[in-house]
Length: 386
Ligand code: NAD
Ligand code: MG
Image: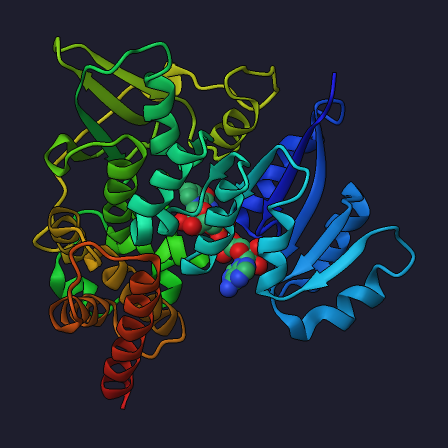
Protein backbone atom coordinates (compact mmCIF):
# COMPACT_ATOMS: atom_id res chain seq x y z
CA UNK A 1 0.00 0.00 0.00
CA UNK A 2 1.20 3.52 -0.78
CA UNK A 3 2.02 5.66 2.22
CA UNK A 4 -0.02 8.79 2.81
CA UNK A 5 2.30 11.71 2.08
CA UNK A 6 1.87 14.45 4.71
CA UNK A 7 2.88 18.11 4.89
CA UNK A 8 2.90 19.51 8.42
CA UNK A 9 2.60 23.29 8.51
CA UNK A 10 3.72 24.41 11.96
CA UNK A 11 5.43 21.13 12.95
CA UNK A 12 7.24 22.79 15.88
CA UNK A 13 4.00 23.85 17.59
CA UNK A 14 1.77 21.95 19.97
CA UNK A 15 -0.46 20.38 17.27
CA UNK A 16 2.50 19.93 14.91
CA UNK A 17 4.56 18.03 17.47
CA UNK A 18 1.62 15.82 18.39
CA UNK A 19 1.03 15.12 14.70
CA UNK A 20 4.58 13.82 14.44
CA UNK A 21 4.02 11.69 17.56
CA UNK A 22 0.95 10.13 15.95
CA UNK A 23 2.76 9.54 12.66
CA UNK A 24 5.73 7.96 14.45
CA UNK A 25 3.44 5.09 15.52
CA UNK A 26 2.72 4.08 11.93
CA UNK A 27 5.86 4.37 9.81
CA UNK A 28 4.33 1.99 7.25
CA UNK A 29 1.22 4.17 6.77
CA UNK A 30 2.52 7.74 6.57
CA UNK A 31 5.50 9.57 5.20
CA UNK A 32 6.35 13.09 6.32
CA UNK A 33 7.14 14.98 3.11
CA UNK A 34 7.45 18.50 4.48
CA UNK A 35 7.75 20.13 7.89
CA UNK A 36 7.66 23.87 8.55
CA UNK A 37 8.40 26.12 11.50
CA UNK A 38 9.01 29.75 12.34
CA UNK A 39 11.58 30.51 15.01
CA UNK A 40 12.34 27.23 16.77
CA UNK A 41 15.11 26.23 14.38
CA UNK A 42 16.75 23.73 16.72
CA UNK A 43 13.54 21.73 17.10
CA UNK A 44 12.79 21.94 13.38
CA UNK A 45 16.25 20.54 12.62
CA UNK A 46 15.80 17.78 15.19
CA UNK A 47 12.45 16.83 13.65
CA UNK A 48 14.06 16.78 10.20
CA UNK A 49 16.72 14.37 11.47
CA UNK A 50 14.11 12.07 12.97
CA UNK A 51 11.61 12.02 10.07
CA UNK A 52 13.80 12.79 7.03
CA UNK A 53 11.25 14.83 5.09
CA UNK A 54 12.03 15.87 1.50
CA UNK A 55 11.69 19.56 2.39
CA UNK A 56 12.03 21.68 5.52
CA UNK A 57 10.80 25.27 5.57
CA UNK A 58 11.39 28.07 8.01
CA UNK A 59 8.73 30.72 7.52
CA UNK A 60 11.05 33.36 8.89
CA UNK A 61 13.84 34.01 6.35
CA UNK A 62 16.32 35.15 8.97
CA UNK A 63 16.59 31.58 10.25
CA UNK A 64 17.47 30.15 6.82
CA UNK A 65 21.25 29.95 7.21
CA UNK A 66 21.08 28.45 10.69
CA UNK A 67 18.64 25.78 9.46
CA UNK A 68 20.67 25.09 6.31
CA UNK A 69 23.85 24.63 8.39
CA UNK A 70 22.09 22.38 10.89
CA UNK A 71 20.91 20.08 8.07
CA UNK A 72 23.91 20.18 5.76
CA UNK A 73 24.66 16.47 6.10
CA UNK A 74 21.08 15.42 5.30
CA UNK A 75 19.44 14.92 1.88
CA UNK A 76 16.71 17.50 2.56
CA UNK A 77 15.79 20.65 0.69
CA UNK A 78 15.76 23.76 2.90
CA UNK A 79 13.47 26.67 1.99
CA UNK A 80 12.56 29.93 3.71
CA UNK A 81 9.86 32.56 3.61
CA UNK A 82 6.09 32.62 3.46
CA UNK A 83 6.04 31.99 -0.30
CA UNK A 84 7.76 28.67 0.37
CA UNK A 85 4.80 27.67 2.56
CA UNK A 86 2.54 28.05 -0.47
CA UNK A 87 4.98 26.18 -2.67
CA UNK A 88 5.19 23.08 -0.47
CA UNK A 89 1.44 22.55 -0.19
CA UNK A 90 0.95 22.42 -3.94
CA UNK A 91 3.30 19.53 -4.71
CA UNK A 92 2.81 15.76 -4.89
CA UNK A 93 1.27 15.28 -1.44
CA UNK A 94 -1.85 13.62 -0.03
CA UNK A 95 -2.72 15.71 3.03
CA UNK A 96 -1.74 19.02 4.57
CA UNK A 97 -1.91 19.29 8.36
CA UNK A 98 -2.58 23.02 8.84
CA UNK A 99 -1.19 23.70 12.33
CA UNK A 100 0.14 27.24 11.96
CA UNK A 101 -1.44 29.63 14.44
CA UNK A 102 -3.39 32.71 13.31
CA UNK A 103 -4.08 34.57 10.06
CA UNK A 104 -0.66 33.44 8.76
CA UNK A 105 -2.20 30.01 8.15
CA UNK A 106 -4.82 31.24 5.69
CA UNK A 107 -2.89 31.45 2.42
CA UNK A 108 -1.21 28.04 2.59
CA UNK A 109 -4.61 26.44 3.32
CA UNK A 110 -6.23 28.18 0.36
CA UNK A 111 -3.30 27.24 -1.86
CA UNK A 112 -3.51 23.58 -0.85
CA UNK A 113 -7.24 23.48 -1.57
CA UNK A 114 -6.79 25.28 -4.92
CA UNK A 115 -4.36 22.50 -5.86
CA UNK A 116 -6.83 19.83 -4.85
CA UNK A 117 -4.90 18.77 -1.74
CA UNK A 118 -7.07 17.80 1.28
CA UNK A 119 -6.47 19.75 4.47
CA UNK A 120 -6.59 18.56 8.08
CA UNK A 121 -7.44 21.87 9.68
CA UNK A 122 -6.24 22.81 13.16
CA UNK A 123 -5.80 26.48 12.25
CA UNK A 124 -9.29 27.71 13.17
CA UNK A 125 -8.42 31.34 12.42
CA UNK A 126 -8.43 30.41 8.71
CA UNK A 127 -12.17 29.75 8.86
CA UNK A 128 -12.87 32.67 11.18
CA UNK A 129 -11.23 35.08 8.76
CA UNK A 130 -12.42 33.75 5.41
CA UNK A 131 -14.59 30.68 6.01
CA UNK A 132 -16.83 31.43 3.03
CA UNK A 133 -13.91 31.56 0.58
CA UNK A 134 -12.15 28.55 2.10
CA UNK A 135 -15.23 26.31 2.00
CA UNK A 136 -16.24 27.54 -1.46
CA UNK A 137 -12.75 26.64 -2.72
CA UNK A 138 -12.95 23.19 -1.13
CA UNK A 139 -16.35 22.61 -2.73
CA UNK A 140 -15.29 23.83 -6.16
CA UNK A 141 -12.19 21.62 -6.08
CA UNK A 142 -14.11 18.72 -4.52
CA UNK A 143 -11.54 18.33 -1.79
CA UNK A 144 -12.07 17.76 1.92
CA UNK A 145 -11.39 19.94 4.91
CA UNK A 146 -11.11 17.59 7.89
CA UNK A 147 -11.44 19.24 11.31
CA UNK A 148 -8.70 18.73 13.89
CA UNK A 149 -10.06 20.98 16.64
CA UNK A 150 -11.41 18.49 19.20
CA UNK A 151 -14.97 19.87 19.23
CA UNK A 152 -15.21 19.94 15.46
CA UNK A 153 -13.65 16.52 15.13
CA UNK A 154 -16.35 15.35 17.55
CA UNK A 155 -19.13 16.84 15.42
CA UNK A 156 -17.51 15.47 12.26
CA UNK A 157 -17.33 11.99 13.81
CA UNK A 158 -20.97 12.21 14.97
CA UNK A 159 -21.98 13.07 11.40
CA UNK A 160 -20.33 10.03 9.80
CA UNK A 161 -23.02 7.89 8.23
CA UNK A 162 -25.68 10.58 8.65
CA UNK A 163 -27.44 12.29 5.80
CA UNK A 164 -28.17 15.82 7.04
CA UNK A 165 -30.94 16.28 9.59
CA UNK A 166 -28.94 18.44 12.03
CA UNK A 167 -31.15 20.54 14.29
CA UNK A 168 -28.27 22.10 16.18
CA UNK A 169 -24.82 21.39 17.50
CA UNK A 170 -23.59 21.89 21.05
CA UNK A 171 -19.94 22.82 21.43
CA UNK A 172 -18.52 21.99 24.84
CA UNK A 173 -16.12 24.37 26.57
CA UNK A 174 -13.97 23.62 29.62
CA UNK A 175 -14.47 27.18 30.85
CA UNK A 176 -10.71 27.64 31.14
CA UNK A 177 -8.73 28.47 34.27
CA UNK A 178 -11.03 31.33 35.36
CA UNK A 179 -14.33 29.51 35.34
CA UNK A 180 -16.74 31.06 37.86
CA UNK A 181 -14.58 34.17 38.31
CA UNK A 182 -15.99 37.67 37.97
CA UNK A 183 -14.70 40.95 36.57
CA UNK A 184 -13.15 42.12 39.85
CA UNK A 185 -10.87 39.06 39.72
CA UNK A 186 -10.17 39.11 35.99
CA UNK A 187 -9.02 42.72 36.03
CA UNK A 188 -5.82 41.65 37.86
CA UNK A 189 -5.08 38.46 35.95
CA UNK A 190 -1.53 38.19 34.55
CA UNK A 191 -0.14 36.10 31.70
CA UNK A 192 1.41 33.32 33.77
CA UNK A 193 -1.86 32.58 35.51
CA UNK A 194 -3.84 32.74 32.27
CA UNK A 195 -1.40 30.27 30.67
CA UNK A 196 -2.34 27.54 33.15
CA UNK A 197 -5.12 25.66 31.40
CA UNK A 198 -6.73 22.94 33.54
CA UNK A 199 -7.22 20.26 30.85
CA UNK A 200 -5.18 20.97 27.71
CA UNK A 201 -1.53 21.82 27.03
CA UNK A 202 -1.52 24.00 23.96
CA UNK A 203 0.28 26.88 22.26
CA UNK A 204 0.25 30.22 24.10
CA UNK A 205 -2.22 32.01 21.84
CA UNK A 206 -4.99 29.41 22.06
CA UNK A 207 -4.37 29.04 25.81
CA UNK A 208 -5.09 32.74 26.33
CA UNK A 209 -8.10 32.46 24.00
CA UNK A 210 -9.36 29.62 26.19
CA UNK A 211 -8.98 31.75 29.32
CA UNK A 212 -11.00 34.62 27.76
CA UNK A 213 -13.50 32.23 26.08
CA UNK A 214 -12.60 33.82 22.73
CA UNK A 215 -11.51 30.33 21.72
CA UNK A 216 -15.10 29.13 21.97
CA UNK A 217 -16.27 32.13 19.96
CA UNK A 218 -13.73 31.36 17.24
CA UNK A 219 -14.95 27.75 17.33
CA UNK A 220 -18.59 28.79 16.84
CA UNK A 221 -17.55 30.62 13.67
CA UNK A 222 -15.35 27.69 12.65
CA UNK A 223 -18.32 25.32 13.07
CA UNK A 224 -20.61 27.62 11.09
CA UNK A 225 -18.42 27.17 8.02
CA UNK A 226 -17.30 23.56 8.46
CA UNK A 227 -20.83 22.24 8.84
CA UNK A 228 -22.75 24.90 6.90
CA UNK A 229 -24.92 25.93 9.86
CA UNK A 230 -26.93 29.02 10.73
CA UNK A 231 -25.66 30.97 13.75
CA UNK A 232 -28.75 30.01 15.76
CA UNK A 233 -27.94 26.31 15.28
CA UNK A 234 -24.73 26.63 17.31
CA UNK A 235 -24.82 26.46 21.10
CA UNK A 236 -22.10 26.44 23.74
CA UNK A 237 -22.22 24.56 27.03
CA UNK A 238 -19.60 24.68 29.77
CA UNK A 239 -18.38 21.19 30.61
CA UNK A 240 -15.31 21.48 32.86
CA UNK A 241 -14.23 17.82 32.60
CA UNK A 242 -13.69 18.08 28.80
CA UNK A 243 -14.61 14.46 28.09
CA UNK A 244 -17.70 15.08 25.98
CA UNK A 245 -16.00 16.80 23.08
CA UNK A 246 -19.23 18.04 21.45
CA UNK A 247 -22.75 16.99 20.56
CA UNK A 248 -25.05 16.95 17.53
CA UNK A 249 -28.79 17.19 18.05
CA UNK A 250 -30.78 15.82 15.11
CA UNK A 251 -34.24 16.84 13.89
CA UNK A 252 -35.81 13.80 15.59
CA UNK A 253 -34.49 14.95 18.99
CA UNK A 254 -31.75 12.33 19.11
CA UNK A 255 -28.37 13.47 20.46
CA UNK A 256 -25.03 12.05 19.40
CA UNK A 257 -21.89 12.94 21.36
CA UNK A 258 -18.27 11.98 20.91
CA UNK A 259 -16.27 11.34 24.08
CA UNK A 260 -12.75 10.57 25.18
CA UNK A 261 -9.94 11.81 27.35
CA UNK A 262 -8.84 15.37 26.57
CA UNK A 263 -5.93 14.42 24.30
CA UNK A 264 -5.42 16.22 20.99
CA UNK A 265 -3.62 13.20 19.59
CA UNK A 266 -6.99 11.47 19.17
CA UNK A 267 -8.60 14.07 16.85
CA UNK A 268 -5.23 14.51 15.12
CA UNK A 269 -5.03 10.79 14.45
CA UNK A 270 -8.63 10.68 13.22
CA UNK A 271 -7.92 13.51 10.77
CA UNK A 272 -4.94 11.53 9.43
CA UNK A 273 -6.77 8.19 9.13
CA UNK A 274 -10.28 9.34 8.16
CA UNK A 275 -12.49 7.63 7.01
CA UNK A 276 -10.78 4.70 8.75
CA UNK A 277 -9.32 4.29 12.22
CA UNK A 278 -6.06 2.75 13.42
CA UNK A 279 -5.41 1.02 16.72
CA UNK A 280 -3.22 2.95 19.15
CA UNK A 281 -2.16 2.57 22.76
CA UNK A 282 -3.13 6.00 24.08
CA UNK A 283 -4.64 5.99 27.60
CA UNK A 284 -8.31 5.01 27.60
CA UNK A 285 -11.23 6.84 29.21
CA UNK A 286 -12.96 5.17 32.13
CA UNK A 287 -16.28 6.25 33.65
CA UNK A 288 -14.89 5.15 37.01
CA UNK A 289 -12.51 8.11 36.96
CA UNK A 290 -15.31 10.53 36.02
CA UNK A 291 -18.24 9.80 38.35
CA UNK A 292 -19.62 13.29 37.75
CA UNK A 293 -19.92 15.08 34.44
CA UNK A 294 -21.27 18.62 34.82
CA UNK A 295 -22.75 21.20 32.49
CA UNK A 296 -23.44 24.90 32.80
CA UNK A 297 -24.24 27.99 30.76
CA UNK A 298 -21.33 30.20 29.66
CA UNK A 299 -21.13 33.51 31.53
CA UNK A 300 -21.00 35.86 28.56
CA UNK A 301 -21.54 38.94 30.72
CA UNK A 302 -18.20 38.34 32.43
CA UNK A 303 -16.38 36.71 29.52
CA UNK A 304 -17.42 39.32 26.99
CA UNK A 305 -15.11 38.03 24.24
CA UNK A 306 -17.57 35.22 23.71
CA UNK A 307 -20.43 37.72 23.36
CA UNK A 308 -18.36 39.70 20.84
CA UNK A 309 -17.67 36.56 18.83
CA UNK A 310 -21.38 35.70 18.86
CA UNK A 311 -22.07 39.17 17.46
CA UNK A 312 -19.43 38.65 14.76
CA UNK A 313 -20.95 35.28 13.91
CA UNK A 314 -24.43 36.84 13.59
CA UNK A 315 -23.37 39.85 11.55
CA UNK A 316 -20.84 38.03 9.34
CA UNK A 317 -19.11 39.80 6.44
CA UNK A 318 -15.64 40.98 7.42
CA UNK A 319 -16.56 41.41 11.12
CA UNK A 320 -15.13 38.03 12.23
CA UNK A 321 -11.93 38.88 10.33
CA UNK A 322 -11.68 42.25 12.12
CA UNK A 323 -12.34 40.61 15.45
CA UNK A 324 -9.74 37.93 14.80
CA UNK A 325 -7.04 40.42 13.81
CA UNK A 326 -7.67 42.60 16.87
CA UNK A 327 -7.69 39.48 19.04
CA UNK A 328 -4.34 38.25 17.69
CA UNK A 329 -2.82 41.64 18.46
CA UNK A 330 -4.23 41.93 21.98
CA UNK A 331 -3.28 38.38 22.93
CA UNK A 332 0.25 39.11 21.76
CA UNK A 333 0.30 42.32 23.83
CA UNK A 334 -1.17 40.57 26.89
CA UNK A 335 1.51 37.87 26.64
CA UNK A 336 4.09 40.66 26.73
CA UNK A 337 2.42 42.18 29.82
CA UNK A 338 1.57 45.35 27.87
CA UNK A 339 -2.17 45.32 28.59
CA UNK A 340 -4.51 43.78 31.13
CA UNK A 341 -6.84 40.81 30.74
CA UNK A 342 -10.01 42.88 30.39
CA UNK A 343 -8.34 45.49 28.21
CA UNK A 344 -8.09 42.80 25.54
CA UNK A 345 -11.88 42.81 25.27
CA UNK A 346 -12.12 46.62 25.20
CA UNK A 347 -9.72 46.84 22.27
CA UNK A 348 -11.40 44.06 20.28
CA UNK A 349 -14.76 45.75 20.79
CA UNK A 350 -13.46 49.10 19.66
CA UNK A 351 -11.91 47.56 16.54
CA UNK A 352 -15.19 45.82 15.73
CA UNK A 353 -17.07 49.11 16.13
CA UNK A 354 -14.62 51.29 14.22
CA UNK A 355 -13.24 49.30 11.29
CA UNK A 356 -14.98 49.59 7.95
CA UNK A 357 -17.58 46.87 7.46
CA UNK A 358 -17.91 44.93 4.22
CA UNK A 359 -20.81 42.58 3.69
CA UNK A 360 -19.44 40.32 0.98
CA UNK A 361 -15.67 40.63 1.16
CA UNK A 362 -13.21 39.36 -1.41
CA UNK A 363 -9.94 37.77 -0.35
CA UNK A 364 -8.24 41.14 -0.86
CA UNK A 365 -10.89 42.76 1.36
CA UNK A 366 -10.17 40.23 4.09
CA UNK A 367 -6.44 40.91 3.84
CA UNK A 368 -7.09 44.64 4.00
CA UNK A 369 -9.50 44.31 6.94
CA UNK A 370 -6.97 42.18 8.79
CA UNK A 371 -4.33 44.84 8.23
CA UNK A 372 -6.44 47.82 9.30
CA UNK A 373 -7.84 46.06 12.37
CA UNK A 374 -4.29 45.19 13.44
CA UNK A 375 -3.13 48.78 12.97
CA UNK A 376 -6.02 50.11 15.03
CA UNK A 377 -5.51 47.51 17.74
CA UNK A 378 -1.80 48.34 17.92
CA UNK A 379 -2.63 52.02 18.32
CA UNK A 380 -5.06 51.25 21.15
CA UNK A 381 -2.55 48.91 22.80
CA UNK A 382 0.10 51.65 22.69
CA UNK A 383 -2.35 54.10 24.33
CA UNK A 384 -3.21 51.67 27.10
CA UNK A 385 0.35 50.59 27.79
CA UNK A 386 1.57 54.22 28.18
P1 NAD B 1 1.70 26.83 18.57
O1 NAD B 1 1.94 28.26 18.86
O2 NAD B 1 2.14 25.81 19.53
O3 NAD B 1 2.36 26.46 17.15
C1 NAD B 1 2.22 27.28 16.05
C2 NAD B 1 3.10 26.80 14.90
O4 NAD B 1 2.97 27.74 13.83
C3 NAD B 1 4.58 26.71 15.24
O5 NAD B 1 5.15 25.66 14.50
C4 NAD B 1 5.14 28.04 14.73
O6 NAD B 1 6.50 27.95 14.38
C5 NAD B 1 4.28 28.28 13.50
N1 NAD B 1 4.08 29.70 13.19
C6 NAD B 1 3.79 30.69 14.07
N2 NAD B 1 3.65 31.86 13.42
C7 NAD B 1 3.87 31.60 12.12
C8 NAD B 1 3.88 32.41 10.95
N3 NAD B 1 3.63 33.73 11.00
N4 NAD B 1 4.13 31.82 9.77
C9 NAD B 1 4.38 30.49 9.70
N5 NAD B 1 4.39 29.68 10.77
C10 NAD B 1 4.14 30.23 11.97
O7 NAD B 1 0.14 26.69 18.28
P2 NAD B 1 -0.80 25.41 18.49
O8 NAD B 1 -1.31 25.42 19.86
O9 NAD B 1 -0.14 24.21 17.94
O10 NAD B 1 -2.02 25.81 17.55
C11 NAD B 1 -1.97 25.76 16.15
C12 NAD B 1 -3.37 25.98 15.60
O11 NAD B 1 -4.18 24.88 16.00
C13 NAD B 1 -4.05 27.23 16.16
O12 NAD B 1 -4.85 27.81 15.16
C14 NAD B 1 -4.92 26.70 17.28
O13 NAD B 1 -6.06 27.50 17.49
C15 NAD B 1 -5.31 25.33 16.73
N6 NAD B 1 -5.63 24.35 17.78
C16 NAD B 1 -4.68 24.00 18.67
C17 NAD B 1 -4.97 23.06 19.67
C18 NAD B 1 -3.93 22.62 20.67
O14 NAD B 1 -4.18 21.72 21.45
N7 NAD B 1 -2.75 23.19 20.67
C19 NAD B 1 -6.25 22.51 19.74
C20 NAD B 1 -7.20 22.90 18.80
C21 NAD B 1 -6.87 23.82 17.82
MG1 MG C 1 -11.16 23.24 20.54
